[in-house]
Length: 297
Image (cartoon, rainbow, N blue to C red; front, side):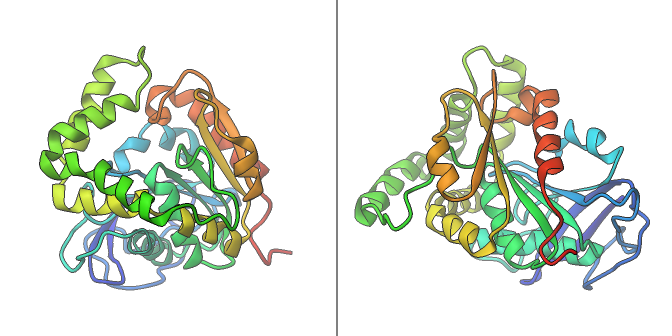
């Protein structure tokens, strides 16, 4: 089932609903366009819904290998964040993690999902923290797919001036020639032995993103670590980082913030596309380990 809903700032957000419970009750929120007006409950088999959030300059189709695996047992929702895929842009001027989190929350509220797990790839991991802030008492846990491999020590602000300079230098090639910089950036995220057809497809797809939106989103994503750390602390939800095994993640730094590391060997940044079976297994293991949502008996 495909549908759309207006985010808080009026941007149209497209989504798909798959699997068990797609005809359940619940249409929290209004402003729906097109299909999807009957909502999606989680009554199919009593399992929490799984909401999958793509990364920077990607779209909901990047989860195409995981949807069939999980839709066989539970409701699965995939979302196009505003400015990505089939979602709109009108009404938004800043492409921040809180605004993207509002997109996800708008879909969840519209579908009446009261019992869910949030999973995000790359920038999507930052987004799901912001979405969880807007969905108190409804989220079992958070799953990152290669969002952070290490997190700063609590109370260590680092050097803000140096961080700002580094970010400006990093963004400069994207501002100068977005498509060329993005293709080069994406290729560096794959291992040397990755499937060349997959690498070429992802590089071309992401390089076709709207440059102004993409650069602003990238700027906010790459400076979001302090907000992510604060969100983990404030939410108190269990969190799992499913990361490539190489180079190894800093397990201790993640654990200090309550994040459990789950490495996947032989993959790069786009692990759900590179090794769908291994990524799906890791997702399933993380979901199975989560307790009930906050406040559940």
